Image (spheres, one colour):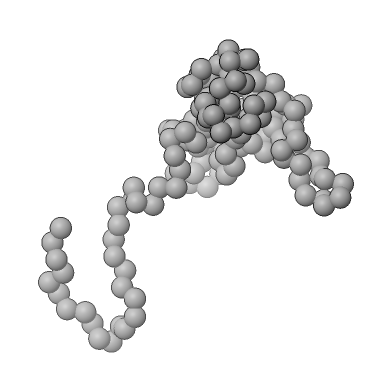
Length: 131
């Protein structure tokens, strides 16, 4: 890396901006989104029950809809629970956001907790089907 050989302008005091490679800003892991595919995390015990292996394709189906994902086995996941990352599956915006992954909102229950009024995302019954 070459050092800075110019001089700083005194008429613009304050912070300076430096360039950094895009890979330094990565906030996603390959077990959440790889290419355009979302990954669902499930416990290995749950995977065995549904005859799923790490990397298999599966459909997660609820009364509201279905999404197609790849499976990521994670021992830290509670058995019997399917975990999907939020924030994907956009159908608008630009080429870098549109069409990346699946939108969990397509399958979650739109109900609300009667006491708090918060959405009840974590209580949606689903079927897990190996593709």
